[in-house]
Image (cartoon, rainbow, N blue to C red; front, side, top):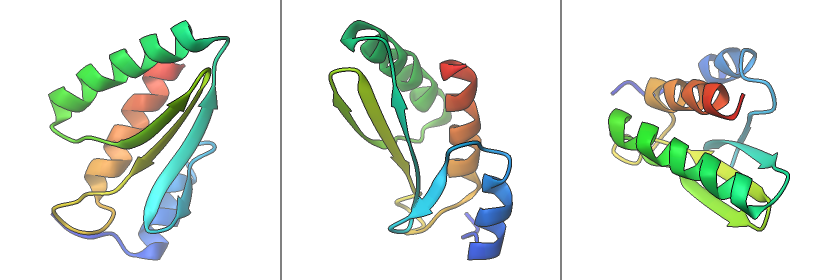
Length: 93
């Protein structure tokens, strides 16, 4: 896995609305109508994470969800993180 440099990460984030580089991870927070909607989206994302064999750091409080991505094996951000962020965007809609 090739580690992405800051320029590559920033360039990739231009196509991912709301995602930002912070603390060596790309991250975004989402707000949903209620806990049930947040949890159902998390479940959908979890299945996609299993499919891609790539798992986020995330936190859910009632109707909010914060997702942080980095590739632990590379100890950095890689294309796997960008690909998963794109998939998450499709799921959340």
